[in-house]
Length: 517
Image (cartoon, rainbow, N blue to C red; front, side):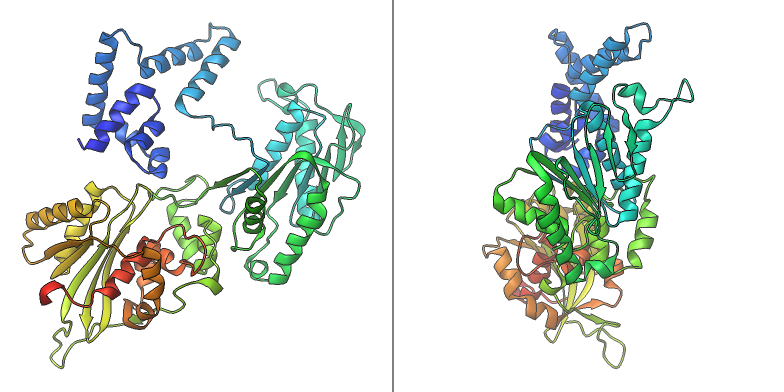
């Protein structure tokens, strides 16, 4: 059992929440959110948790797990009063982190991949808000009048639905006092009993005259890639939002923008920049189709196989924006052109002309960072990329993977940055190499004292001119390619591990001490 696994077990006994325990133990946010079950099924971890729990019980302390089991028994017992069972479930949800922390925000921006229930979620929110408070005034804005009308009808029809089956719940079962006002149920503008003009659905081509909103929802304004790349369309969307919609938001009103990302300057991007500059309280929820740990956001909606099939057929910029919510400005991209090769250089006898076989590794700084290890050969000042390992997996996985890659490519010298645990990583990789019978690769490490961003920017031209990739590199190393091709010259970049390692390749044309292959 690793030290991180040990910490996880200890934190788990304290709080009973697998995700919280994983985060406190040093696992990444994505791993903590989706893969704690794997930790709990680990035999060593489970045994240690049992040991700690028994010790706590001996000390006459009811563990978090025991409390959860007691509450679960209460919730499952049909002989208990419904109110008691509901309270038990509510308490359990709070203990296990099912409820998100309440954040008092004025603006909320939610970014989701296509077909992941954006409009459905927004519609259910409208129903819930009006059920809780029928005096609320809600305005929704959609791409066009057809979509806005459909959105409105779905909400109106849900509120008006009559119960037909005793065992199938309807809206009135939850909110019996919330009803559409008789004779005031138009498609795009309607009221609730006891109120006036509770709901308006509109679009950039519609109207909002005379309507004020305590909650405003903007639902996916961009139709396709053509619009996303049309500066005039995006400017019209922004003008409609600022000139028409914002003016209808009442004092202390709330704004929700829910959309798939398309570009850095789409409505979500511009709104984030605008409200941050204005000092507004913002909550930004960004959900990727492909999670950092390799799992999918929702397999029932989009499997990994379907994701790869869809994204491989579209431009990398649109794929990164739509599915990973990582829009990139093509005009501001640092690496505008990268060279490729179809074959490695050989002499007239077919023997390799590569002078050195090297590997440069940038270890992960934090749990959310990536390890990037690039194997390459050097010939007459040209760098030929041979293989890439780019992953956010923990060191117990990446150390043997790195050693395997070094061994397969008969790397003469492996250079590893030692800034963030790199020295320990290097020693472990060397040990793994020896296990594989590899005594050829020299493992060396050094402290990188130069500024990372400055190195990446100043060496970008040299990288584009002198570093060559296999022709199919973007398909072979999709995550690595995405990180390299999306890196922006200015502004904040989500990840810089891949460009950093690529820069390290260019900075090291030969091994220390002329270590020959």
